[in-house]
Length: 230
Image 1 (spheres, rainbow, N blue to C red):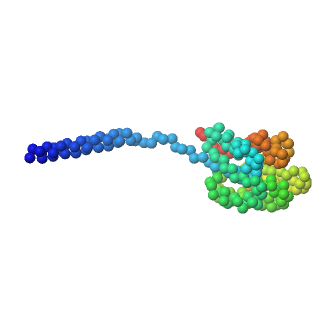
Image 2 (spheres, rainbow, N blue to C red):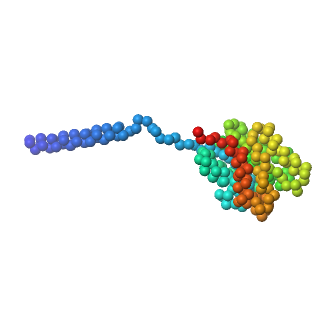
C-alpha cells in the first residue's frame, strides 16, 4: 500500500508542475501582447504609366538611361511614392497603341503619359487618323480610370515631310489637350530633336545625354501633378 501511495503522490506532483508551468507561460504571453498596434502603415506606390514607342522604350540605350528610368530615379531621390511603368514598344503607331491599350490598362493607373504619334508622322499617316487614335486612347483611359491624370506628349515631324503636313500634325496635340482638359508637353524632344550631338547615328533617337533632356521636358509637367508627402 505505501508503494501505491508514493506512486500516486509522484503522479499528482507532476500534474501540478505542468499546470503551473502552463499558467505561467499564458500569463507571460498575455503580458507581452501589446494593447494596440503602433506599426507604421506601408505606403502604396501610385502608378505612372508611360505609353509610347521607341522613345519611351529607350531604343539604343542602356535600361537605366531611358527617360522613364531617369524619372523613376528622381522620384526615388525625392522619396515620392510613385512607380513608373514603361509601356514603350519600338515602332508603335497610334493605331497599334490604340489596339494594345486595353490590355495595358489592366494595371491600375494614377497618371497616364501618352507618347505616341512620332511614327505616324515619319510614315506620313494622315493627321486625321493620328488625331482619331489619340482621342480614342484618351477616352479609354478616362472611361477605365476617371480619376487618373493624363499628360499628352506633343510631337512634331521634320520639314522633309512637307510644310502642309507638318503644320497639320503639329496642332493635333495642343488641340486635343485643350479639348480633353489634359496636360500637355508641348514637344517631347524640345532641345533634342535635330541636334546631332544629342542623338544616335540614326538622327531620330536620343542618346544618353539627349535622354536626360527629354526626362527634364517631361518632369516640368509631371512635377506639378504629383502629390507631395505632408
